[in-house]
Structure formats: C-alpha cells, structure tokens
Length: 342
Image (tube, rainbow, N blue to C red; front, side, top):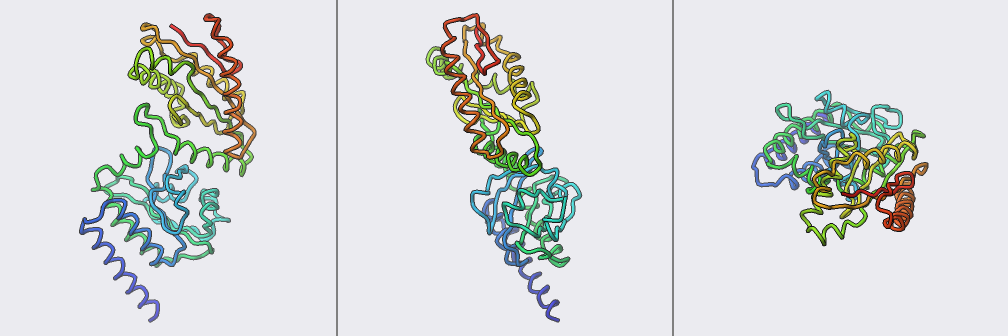
C-alpha cells in the first residue's frame, strides 16, 4: 500500500510538471532547470543533469545538485552511459559506477556519482541529448524510477524539439563564430577531460599551442577584414588535416590542438604538415605575409601544467622567430617557428 501511494503521488507530480511544460510559458533554459530540479525531488537523487549532443561529444546544459562550473563540461558519447542510452533509445541504469564499464569514469568521479539513471531525449528520431539522475550511493534507483524519468524525458524532448534554436544554442556556446572552431570554454573542458583520461588509463597526450606572428601588422596594413581571412585560412587548415574536432581558437590569433594518444614528436609532425600545407595563395597574391609560432608539450597529465609547458615552448619559439625575421628566405619548423610569405 505504501509503495502504491508513493507511485500515485509521483505520477501526479509528473503530470503536473508535464502540464507546466506543455503550457509553453517557459523558455528552454527555464524548462530544463524545472526538469532537473523535479527529477532530484521525485527520484530521491542527489542531482540531475541535461546534456546536448555536439558531434561525438555530449555537453552539460543544465544541472541541479552540481557545481555550476560543470555547465559547459563536455565528454565523449562513446564510453558513456548517456551515449548508450541515446544509441539504444532506452533508459539505462548503472547500479554501481565503480563496477560498471559502460560509464565514463572520470565524469562520474567529478559528479560523485555511484548510481546513474540515464534517459534519452529523442523526439521523432531527433537526438536532443539525455536526462541523467545520479546519487552518491550505489543501488539508488529501481524500475519505478526508470519509468518516472522516462515520462519526464519524453515530455522534455518534445518541448526541446519545438524550441527554436536549441541545438544551435548548444553549438554556439562552445564555438567561435568567425572560424567555426571550438572556443576557449570548450578547450578548457576538453583538455581537462583528456588529461584525466590519460592519467587514468596511462595513455599518451600532447598539446600544441599556436599563434600568428605579425598578425597585428596585417590588421594595421590591410584591415581587419584581411585579418579575419587569415584566421579563417588557418582554421581551414585544421579541417584539411582532419584536426577540426581537436582544434580550438582560444584567443584573438591563438589556437590550440589537443592530441589524445600522441606523443610530442607525433604532434610536432602533424603541426608542421598543417602549417606547410596551408592554402595561402589568395593572401600571398595581395602581399599578406605572417609567421606561425607553436609550442608542444606532452608527458604531463595536469591540464594547467600541460598548457603552461606548451605556452613556455611557444614563447621560446616566438623569440627565436623574431630573431630570424631578418632572413626572409628562412623557413623553420623543427623548433616551432615557420615564416609564411608572399
């Protein structure tokens, strides 16, 4: 009788939430916040999250019972319970994440989650993300909880499907509008995730930081439109080398490339090829020339230390490059400096 009463109250609460969503008075952000708050209360969870897909990644969009800095955190679909739930179009439970190989261990550790309950957000075969409840204790969720989160997930998916710009907003929050590359926020999240994965699995990880020499001179002489063309030309180079998903624009003329599974030598080789193969014919015809300096670091699993090491090498490369600018015919890549000219 007690269980029946609990289920009846829960069903009434779900219907109330569904009615609130269906009324259409809430924007998508407010709707997501209402859902994650209700999930925590309805299921006795310690917290709940909503993520959205972005290529091979899932990105947290809203949360309850979590550090606000986790919003924007991204992790890979493959190897995660949320990704499996989306693939199978069904709600999945992990009773103990420390024993379950289906989960993304680093993300679970960051959340303090021993139990997971993941519902796919799919409407008319459009993948909108996932709704996840978590608890710090194992075996926190049962079949009744699975049914409840499924009902809420279906209502949320329908709302998000009709909310204009949901997927676009997710994309724009982590991408640079000028180059189409991922931005600084996405870079910091990705570097932290890859560093944790490398440390946990003993895998290789390299990082390359690049910036453009004499970029200010290009803007001053030819205008900011020409400067934008230079940035887009460099960004296209990442795409040609199949590095678009690993490349980020992290500042005005600063870029970063994360190399999971590669050492420093392999990363340097990839960057040399990228720089040497940049398509600059149109810029060269107009007399636009600039240099590319880069620094590479590897063998460090702390993300801040890895970034600092790459930045130190970048600074040294730029200093060396400035000394060589008096020799126009010189082209150097072994030490992280390349002169590109008309």
